[in-house]
Length: 231
Image (tube, rainbow, N blue to C red; front, top):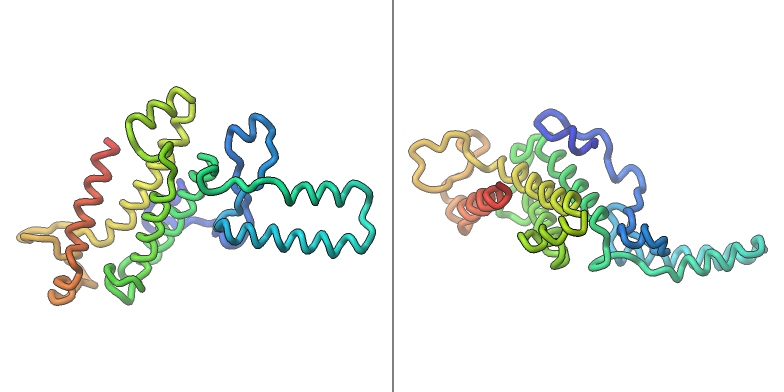
């Protein structure tokens, strides 16, 4: 709700996901069948989760020396053997939470000034815009085939009563694209024959625009194509 209610300029979100630990929810199937699984923490990748499990096993081994109550050691040992639900096996609600977290990062950047806070042009990998754009691409590329946006997948999720969460993932991802790229769309591009970036300051020098390799035009087409697919 914090991310949804801060969807606009001068309305930054109040909760920073880096300040607290949130465990991502298990998949609906695992929840319904009461299967024991481990899930990632918000902002954590699989490698970090595996390292957390190793550290937990080491801590349990050290605490064994203090003669823990009977049954406690067996329970924790069994806990460390529970399968990690990540990657292809990650639940749809978990991916929705990740999309909202990415949306919060983009809103924070946009509300803080967006391109006016950048030291580098958007086509430079060192810019915050490029980093956020890369995270958007990685999120989309890691979606399994069953969660990619298509009519067949939508119909399948409608039949399985999971269409709401499925569409929310793609709607939030679309909002990420809109808020990220609107910073570099001119407001009134009158008498402009080709994309040249923002007309107000800070703007780009013509020689720097020519070195962008078609990024401005390509991103404009990408943004409007994404919007047209969600009509």
